[in-house]
Structure formats: C-alpha cells, structure tokens
Length: 125
Image (cartoon, rainbow, N blue to C red):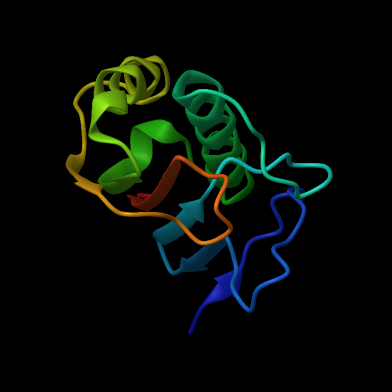
C-alpha cells in the first residue's frame, strides 16, 4: 500500500504522483517544474538541476526525511555533455556517503523542455 505525500508542489497533469511512501520507503520522481505553477523551468542544466533537486528536497522533507536518506538515484539526461554541470549541482544537494546512482542519456524526455529527470528512493529509519 502506498501513501501519496502532500509536498506542496503543484501536481502533474499526468496520471502520476511525484512522491509516495510505503512504510519507511519513499519514492520520488522529479523534472524541473516550478513548484507553484507546475510549469517546466527552462534554462541551462545548472538552472534545471537546481530546481529539480530543490523540489526533491521539499518532497523528502514533506515525507519526514531528508536528502541524507537517499539510497538509490537514477538520473536521465538528454545531453551527455551536461554531465559535469549536473554532477556539480548534485554535489550541492546530495551529501556523503553518496547513494547508489546510475546516469542514463536518453534521446528526449516527455514534454520536450526538460534536460533532466530524476527518480530516487529513500529509506527513513
């Protein structure tokens, strides 16, 4: 059974939830959306990654956790040349010890404006 976490972030128009919890596990999926309007934040990788990780931080806080509780992260990028820019922002938000992580380059993300999408799992104990 899952519980949808009320994060205060504008909900997607798609049939998905950005943050759900099952017992001590929290699952989040984010793209760089403005938390108030739900509109995609445009800009370079640094701008989009900061917005995305701020939203992730808000989601984990709302679920009763923090970025320290991350255990696994899956990152989708649309351009491999932006890996270092993403990594720099990732280091600002994700503390050591780092969770497991995979980064995948894809042709495009749904909606066309996002350069990054992240799915992550956290464990609250």
